[in-house]
Image (cartoon, rainbow, N blue to C red; front, side, top):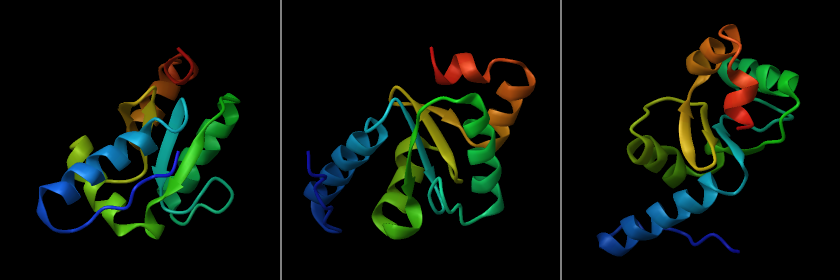
Amino acid sequence: MPVASSSPSGDGGAANLEERLKALINRSKVMIFMKGDRNTPRCGFSKQLIAIINDTGVAYDTFDILTDEAVRQGLKTFSNWPTYPQVYVNGELIGGLDIIKELLEGGELKETLNP
């Protein structure tokens, strides 16, 4: 399914962006919005997150927020989470690197990513 582009003006643009964000969030069971991608993380937080997720063996997809300013800014508002990376499972925001580290330390990460 092609993902519609958003227009910066009017309610139609905001509605299109929200639909586009929902489509991206649900593109994979585990979806990670980050700087870079799984093969070339472009910041330390993203690199740490990918290393942790890779160790779980759980399948996931990534979206490089540096390639799309509308998604980068819009997702912060949509999710009410101001930083990246952001991890979604089954369309629900789990959190960022700190939350993933807490889940890992608590032994709950794999169960959270693969309910």
